[in-house]
Length: 495
Image (cartoon, rainbow, N blue to C red):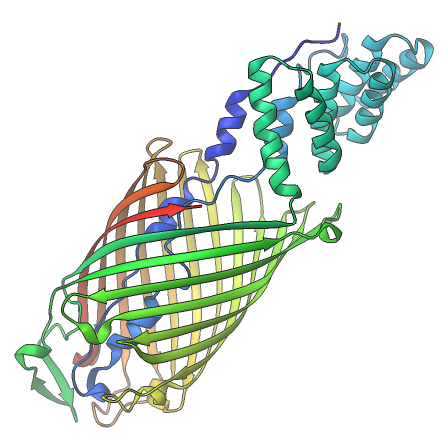
């Protein structure tokens, strides 16, 4: 006999929290404000570090859950055991087809055929059988649910929506109604041509060395150590920050193909940080990024070219205008392992300030490539790693440098609301030439970093997090050798 209503609410709950682990990684507040000694040519790395580590977008919370077609279809499907006495195989499917043709009014044969066809991923055949049954008996709500699930697997979202809405009108059991309504909400979102989302965040950072002062309390001038004045040594400071971001996703119907689909993303974000003491490092960042995501559905391969612009000010003075073109790619090797790669080219236009006349010496280009991986080890444990190679070219040769870096992270979900994130990183920067005012040696920096964030999701909108980050830059030149401890607390909301 045709089976009664059956649903899987656990699958629906997994849908709601499937990507929650992303919160931790995206909320870890970056190291932002560093300062400089009065002579920018001696030690002006602070402003550069502030810009380099400023977020290109908001400190994000987890994205709102999107429709997972596979999970949604599973939660709608009935008991796959209703296939007669046969195991799923093409031979048994053909046998059931002959029985259907011999007894066209026997809906049990038709239902068993549709169920076996679905189990064999013959979804077109399954849909045809379900459709024939409903033409004969339109009141078979169990069949209509299975047809909706089959349409989901075929990517026919409009048809799936029609079938599910029909089931709702017939007042199904409460558990079925709740499941269908959740899937319909996701369908409506997927079918909409325009999608808006965003977030806002506020927080506070405490730095042990907010001005990036040399660890030895000395700097070099013509290879001669010079003691720093009291106001040029390491200063601890508090930094208050706010961030806001809006994303628009355009999903035109003509770009929703069976094999390839595409959407157009537009991201606008603003970030502002004010120091308690080091006011010359008050930082503002405005960012714009636009470009498509192109997805090959069969393989899951995603290609994301984009253009970006970033405008940074220090103490209300324009510091950097950065224009970038980049290309990112993702390829899933399995359901739990994802390879990533990217390339980026930047045109960097620095502005001198009234106190500093050497910022424009950094004007030039930067190019980088990266390769990485993300691995869902268990439903509660995630690993990620990335290697980056970067080349910067500037007006003055002693700012030209080559960088190699690697980062790794681990995320653990303690519960559906609590997460922890640990990260480590290493970067080696080699400069091509020496700055004669400082030393006859070309600069080389080796940077080590580590951090931990603990977060708690207060509700579907608010997330509270706190973290610690350590940065240690070992340089062969005293001017650039420093470390910093940072403690961060933030509250973010998404919409």
